Image (cartoon, rainbow, N blue to C red):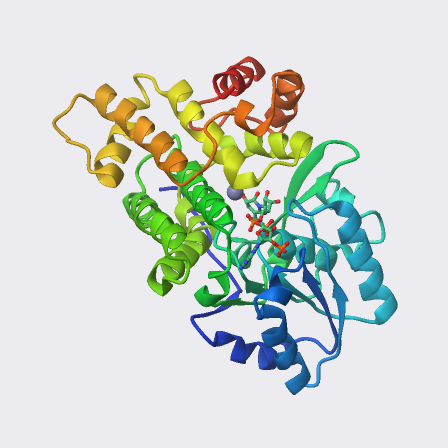
Length: 387
Ligand code: NZQ
Ligand code: ZN
């Protein structure tokens, strides 16, 4: 294992009714907050009312920023920064999934930067200071509730870019699984695929000596396979929703990548799909992942895929490694489609027109230290296999 420092400042209150702790947590850190949410699900399912009750009972005034888009846009971040400055706000509360939370992170960090918030995503600078961020999670997927990453889109330039920095960890996150009962089946499936993809990105790395991290990754994958379909079938199954929620948090809160060199592959390719076509993140991942796996399968990597097949899919360890690997990849593909996710880009209306440009942009930032290094040509081929 390589050296590492592990430090996550986020306070997590997990479980039904934990929203009761929100008011006191905010009052300890902020006077007046911006409440950021999406297209209205939190108004319909009671999450907004529960949060508002907390703010009222603790004497915390607020200003609202509704309408955060799935794949949140930089224009909304700019609007949030403006509101925080003009209204004298000193905290940002996100109600929703990754999009609301990422937007809140963009606003919180953008507040202390005089230039355009897009500069953060363009990596012209690393954020060093942010307003305190609070999250009430309504969707198990991105892990934004306990990581320091924000992914922001700029539709004018077909760009979707992330930034990160220790100041962008939420100060407090409320994880109440019952808040995900109203999540539609498709989003539940997409979220499950996203959790699995975060796990894969960490699990398939060039060095394989972190037994604890790899075993936890396998447990998260098994848990997604067990509970994703259950949550789709019975949306108010607490056990299923709770396990998915905690899986999501642990798939990307850093633990799985400690002590080993990790550089992600499929997410970079998917972010280009979202940048050009505004697709649902988890659906894009479900299409690309099995094709990426097939493309990078070779003599060096087949052992890793074989371990994945036996540990996660209970495949027969006596089979030759290549057959195990191929079977595991096929099980991955059929699992995603069994949850109602698309298997091909054509199904979601994407053709080959922009593949080269997307591959070129995905390649920026490097595919040199990924599980299998990929060139622009390789990435184009994976997009083509996904058609
Ligand atoms: O907008 P509303 O009305 O709230 O509806 C949302 C949205 O339409 C709906 N939804 C969420 N919770 C619900 C609900 N509907 C009913 N009941 C509920 N309880 O679901 C839709 C999707 O929500 P969104 O927040 O967009 O989904 P997700 O959590 O998957 O976030 C996606 C964004 O996060 C980024 C993605 O790229 C994408 O932009 N990511 C962020 C990461 C991070 N911060 O670490 C890492 C990820 O890899 C990812 O890139
Ligand atoms: Zn993701």
